[in-house]
Image 1: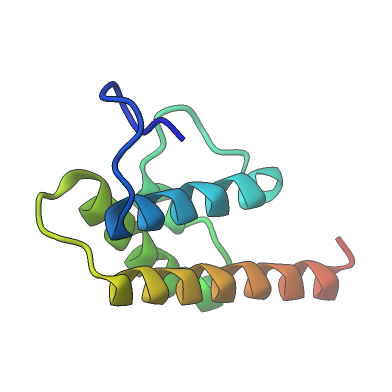
Image 2: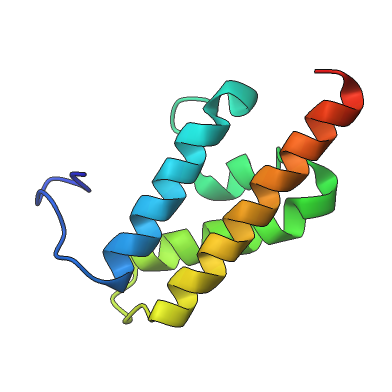
Length: 100
């Protein structure tokens, strides 16, 4: 997966976290109808309210992994994966409850 003009990133925790987040957005695309130029933080405010804080934290993790120079740990990748799973599950539960 190319992540910017420099081409694919080297293997490692940073790439894993960014790719996990981008795959998460792809899975949620039918529900999100992402707007052009919409930031991860704004997008996170449109998820179900009961997981909104979690989505904001996940968006912050993604932004740090994508743009900050600080190292990304395997623990951060694991935490991000747990957060995105919880968000997707909550959204599926909400859809089932609404008859959507």
